[in-house]
Length: 384
Image 1 (cartoon, rainbow, N blue to C red):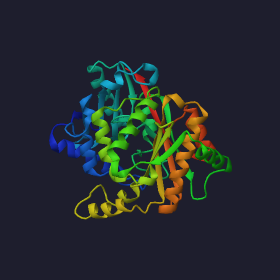
Image 2 (image 1 turned 90 degrees about the horizontal axis):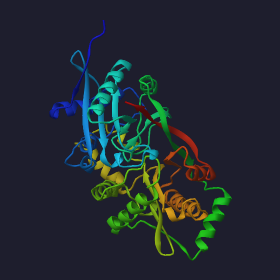
Image 3 (image 1 turned 180 degrees about the horizontal axis):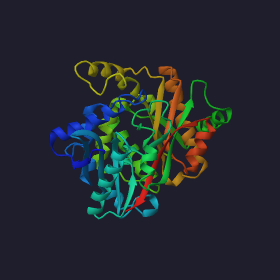
Image 4 (image 1 turned 45 degrees about the horizontal axis):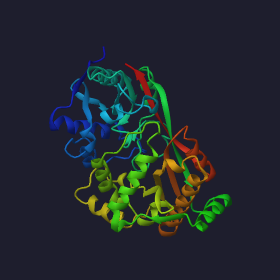
């Protein structure tokens, strides 16, 4: 007879430590799992440090069997997501769970059932999951691409989780795609002609993000993002506190020539960000910076010898979306970033995304530059 699985709320430092450590224990045999920095996970879950908690309620749970920790999950809802139109994926009554890890299917089933129970107690009528914690962190369950490590700020999950989650009555709400792109040899001639045409236009000016005035330029990018994504599926607005928080977190990764802002007629119209893949270094750190890894990381951040770069975010203001101007700005920015990363760091490949499967404009841009889908994440939904 199998042992009973007990699910209990996280309470106190010991439980929080266990919540963090179980991910390391369950994934230690996966060569493609990248151990996160424990201090980063702790900060993500700290209401005093993460401004997500200013508009969200979160409950963490641990699963134990025979006194041994065998899994974890978060259950939460976001007031800003509840205020979004239902056709954009969230809306009234929609809660979430995420950060799930489980030793086996029975543990996963018990964790999900407890998360659903908590969400019902909070008045939720529907689940959109996994969200770890928000759509701006690591949304979705990896369902394709388990054979290679994720890039910076992308999740990696046990391949068995898909079947375990779907067995609990969850159906696919949306697929999120990442694209692999070889960049050392440039893009097709058509893209070169589009870029050259934009360079001749007196209306268009594309410049690098100024790292000496990073806070100002980061604010411009965040404002464009809130505007550009406002009607996208899954969108939740950044608060002012979250803009500052994100700016502070991303500044060490920001290389001036790898991040672009585009202006049309002198007004900010689009942006594109690119970061070196820090996961290449974190994989060797085992989740710890001390005693010596922090020096190694600091040195690497000053001059990242990364062959791989990720383009995680871009946005074009609504005025130019679904127009030739939008694609021209996108091609110009990605070409300038490509030139910089190849010329400065001998970069060989980039990863673009995530991109919603039905975002026709971005999918068309990815196809035009020769990018191929290399990973797929799924967000699931279920009525409670």
